[in-house]
Length: 368
Image: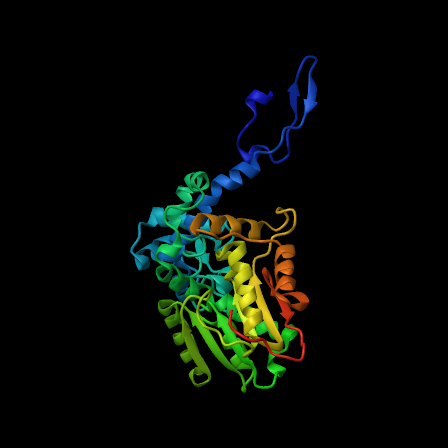
């Protein structure tokens, strides 16, 4: 097969079949088109999962047990042949199992896609990519240097569902982090959770340490998510709420034992991230700990694709957002005055820098 007749379909190219080039012919292995098809199919894969969640398929199958497409169509009020096509696609993605015409939950669906799963991501899927329309405008965003519809135009509308959708994962991560940080062993620690969303970090510390108290900050509308979560955990008596922009809200110097910057630095650009780290240092007591949770990019920007693509998501959705390298965050932490930097990963793909404000024998003066 000549180069001009090379098949564009990955199924026919998995073995990199030989092609003949030149005169006299020489054998040549053309590259597979699979990476191109993987990118093309990415849109379909996402919308297959999104539709399955919108139709409540995972929860419904969880209630009925293994079920055939016609019965599931009657329950969900959908077209049976169209539903069968969608179900087969979900099976192809490895998110359901299908045996003898019956569709059932697999372990992945039970854990991540039913609404009450132990690590559910069901509410996260719709909001994780940011505003969907911004992706169709990505080329123009790159040309103009920013999105036409940044989430900063209506942050509460975006961050409320995001805070709800990320809470389960972040709460698991924050609770597991105690194995490395040992906040449960501190004496009556005071925690500041900046840009807290649903406040999973503050809640984890309060649950683990009966003497702990917390100040939880976010925009007024988003802060209502934190209030609900704190109330659900019965922790309201040990919490103060601090509404406002995390860059400008007043912070008493040297007042906290732990300051959490949980997945907020990447929305703010390099200068904004450095400013937040500086504010954390100023708010901490000597010997206090900052926790910076984010998605960190490797130095070559290619071996951690999740963090790299998260950076593109930030670029597509925000005015200043990007992801940054491990080295940049380490430099900013040291520049602010932190020491004893550690990088921990309590659960997969969830990493945090942990660093200490050194003891110098005196507390800071003034405000930042």
